[in-house]
Length: 498
Image 1 (cartoon, one colour):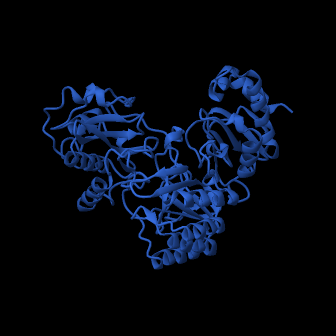
Image 2 (spheres, rainbow, N blue to C red; image 1 turned 135 degrees about the horizontal axis):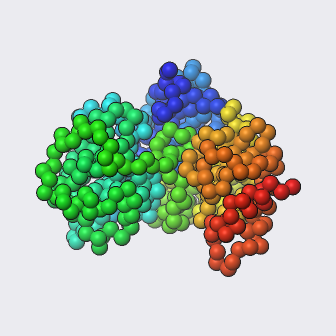
Image 3 (cartoon, rainbow, N blue to C red; image 1 turned 30 degrees about the horizontal axis):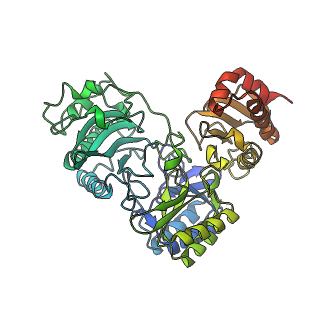
């Protein structure tokens, strides 16, 4: 089995992954962003060698689809000729406004770079699986709360300084809290966790570590005062089970590394991203203040966040938008989680001009746009695995039933049962089958649908659900709450009605 066909691998530029519409490559610039001319050149290369569709994933990676083995090699050569250095090895991610956001608790980039250097020095990249990841979150308006990671370091203000909250195996709501430490200790503990994971093999993640192993990591200079942790919900283990009886444990990166027992092991986490192999993006909608669409004041200048509808856009439209941004003196373009592009260095007037241009090209320019509530894979005919025209269905629903898509729900439209665009549960999921679109209520695309209707007519079935919600909804009630009252059986029957 080679890199072109192996599932579970991240489809890096040097190791494309086979999908239903050809080979897929995913890349992240080492510098965190791209010069406008570089993005234009990359988009032109994607048009020449792929199917002309470019994507930004839920984790903020750039994907190019529809490649062949020969064209993938040409693409890699052209990326190199453009001078775009792409990330390899263990992902150590920071927020899209890292170092630019005046509301950041701390600039996460220096700590992230120290962790990358330590990983390289320890030779861990070759020993860890391709989906193991680290997040260093400095806070601010575009924090990384909804993304899962094996190791998460989050900056917290303590008195006059900053400490780093270390959690494992989840997003900010589901991960297990370990300790609060200074920067040096945060780096050391992060690398120690990665060592422990590596000892368990390339299929392992932090969720596979035992409670005893995690207790061994709670070390000197650590504390977790409740007053500074109001947003922590350690659902995979109580704080006290690691902190209270372990602070005197002498910290050592070798303690329990060889342990293989599963006592107290952390439960598996759910979630990936569009493309299925990036690892750990639970598709829980972020609060509006953290959605990366809109205008953001920076420490110097302004940034404009523009979304790709359903995470996808023709390369020619990205080229047109970027060329216009270049005339407005955009200095850099960063990839943002939740499938967006951030144009950095614009004036407020330029932001409004670019926003209007983006809207006319079909991009998402409003965080309240109903398309932000829909996860839809390429589907048919773009993907050979797709059985329904997912994007057409999504567009129709977004136009006709935007009131259904409030912040309480996610609608997932999947061309097949793989669920590439949204592996986690969604309020409503449409799944493509043989000439039919099945409905799953409060589940994933892998679940057995409770009701079916022809794929070409799926949007009308969702419209019947939306009509029932309009009639039954109490004042102030969310769509999610109303769906719960209607019940899965009732919702399914509405979908099936002719």
